[in-house]
Image 1 (spheres, rainbow, N blue to C red):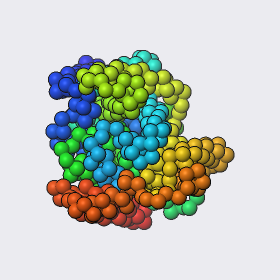
Image 2 (image 1 turned 120 degrees about the horizontal axis):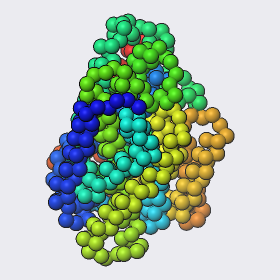
Image 3 (image 1 turned 135 degrees about the vertical axis):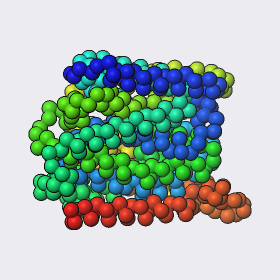
Image 4 (image 1 turned 180 degrees about the vertical axis):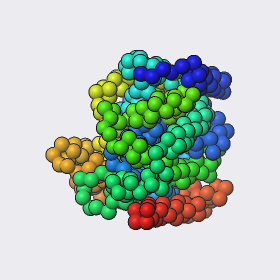
Length: 535
């Protein structure tokens, strides 16, 4: 607990008030369920792009990345090296299917490709994993509020959940996007202020600091080890985590839904491109911050490493710093919580309530229902958040581990839909079950690092699904219309335009801008190699 003071409270309360006000103002533009899900398709691409970045760069990054790097050093960046490749895959293969079909639930693809049951299965997987990860975000924010006020963490969890709930239920996806823009500005400001304060308070020069960190093994970002039990190697980052993050961005309603609010597919792709180029810089910044803290505190142990930034800000004593920092962490968390609540509500309403319980109701009815489901999910997320209060270690690492148990199933469901001719729904469901059981067995019986769970789960799924499909339903005569091959053939046979405003609408066609992502990936890797061997 620290003395927060009037200035800090003014900064924090002012920030919260702005979010609530934005939610109220934007609620005036929500007249239908469609407005709640994807807005009126008038949101500029850059705002959607900032929202995409802010959603994943949450309090888990603001608090968890420095905590993780405090232990592991700069090698943690390997886990986040893959974003250019990930975004290349997502905008080339996933996004055209979703945007062209004008859906509000991306899991509609699974029904069109395989059937209703597979759609329900992947929707349930999304809801479970998103609720668990959102609970981790909620917990991370509550740590901050509890630290600065002395209020219990559980009480803080309830307060933060209520704030995120109010403006999300009011303004829908449009409120989510525009509050994310504000929140990202606060997040960056907080990070920059802390970095400046830390560097100015260092007893040695920056060059001397890096030299000592290098000697202690904390500035070695490139680990070429083939040891599968190590988490932060180049191979886990480039191979395993590419698959993991492809699922996070391509098969995740929370991430894709905001791009469906774009004016056209070009704007949708540009919003994702922003993440492809920005992610490396953001994660490198916060991971470097953790390494610098290791030098500043001479590697001393912390009871809870997620509190390192807060401990520093409290001791530094700059007026308003704790207020800015707290607002930044709250902002980072809100950008993830609001997106999660909106997407969970959308999936629950569209994929279950509207489909199985109350079809053919008015759009006003579904809007009201969506808002009530937003309330319900806010309540449900609180329960695992309280459970996280019993954990220790980096919440960023914890969050990644939670997701790793399920991503293989989601990734393989889309990969088989895109590229497999003979996969059928019955075979697919058997493969999904086998993959998830296989990952659980690997997790409890081996020391294999969690980033590989996605690859292992997907491999088991594919290996079981195709033989099971052939055994149960035989070889399929034709390719599904919703496969990459059939989509390309359809555009060619019907003479349809392959581009809209200079951007491909055909799945599997590569836009010129996407090649810059691959070039950026190579440059990023060479940059890390240069740090490894020349600093």
